[in-house]
Image 1 (spheres, rainbow, N blue to C red):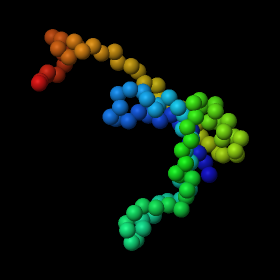
Image 2 (image 1 turned 30 degrees about the vertical axis):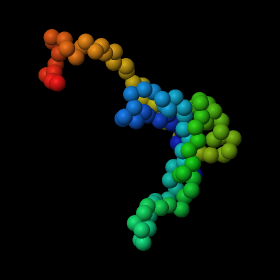
Image 3 (image 1 turned 90 degrees about the horizontal axis):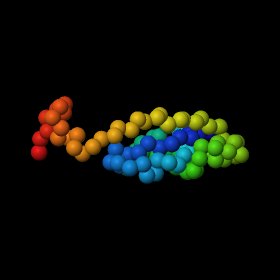
Image 4 (image 1 turned 90 degrees about the vertical axis):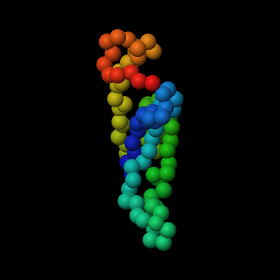
Length: 101
């Protein structure tokens, strides 16, 4: 069983950075999911994929994985550049693109 240690990205409907500061340890799926023939639901025999552990720092997550003998890979977050925008930029003269109501 291998695990991934990563920082989750924010959702598309989220404008702030809530729930993106912690590090998450998730197990990789050991087996493929199968479709239940009667109901059509997707199921798996691997219960470790249901486990998601959250840590405040990357070092805490790595220490937990090494202490419990879990093989892991660390996925570093991509740096994002912040765009400083002003509300008045929507109405400036040299704006690229049409402004509509």
